[in-house]
Image (cartoon, rainbow, N blue to C red; front, side):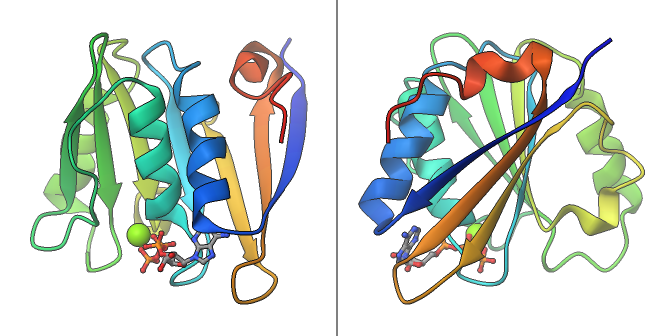
Length: 156
Ligand SMILES: Nc1ncnc2c1ncn2[C@@H]1O[C@H](COP(=O)(O)OP(=O)(O)OP(=O)(O)O)[C@@H](O)[C@H]1O
Ligand SMILES: [Mg+2]
């Protein structure tokens, strides 16, 4: 049985946040689903930028504005970055999301995932970001024991 674990880290700048993302991104194997939770401007997309770079992608990371998702190629898998902020109903996009789940050729990163809670797997990793101040952020990562490779021994 897998037990719930948490890992916490403090960031004092977007550079810090990207570095944390890079460390975890380098550990991705493919098949992971990570939900990113914060208020507006918390640093979710900034973290995605680090994750993609750490996984070996040179693709430009930005908020999916006119689309709901963006793709970043890495040597081993493709990162699918969803942002459901503007989505009024889950519908067809939830179906699109479902196609990537459990597929080791993809890593799924989700911002504003409330609308697809039913579709997101129980065993996803959740990273919550609390805004403490202007540039001060606290990261709370929840995962199970099989996912500990993503966070353990990261030096921050
Ligand atoms: N410690 C920090 N970590 C991350 N971003 C920071 C930090 N300090 C300041 N920032 C700034 O906060 C903003 C974070 O924006 P970002 O787009 O990453 O947030 P977001 O959570 O994706 O927002 P949204 O909900 O609108 O998608 C950026 O302008 C970034 O430079
Ligand atoms: Mg964002």
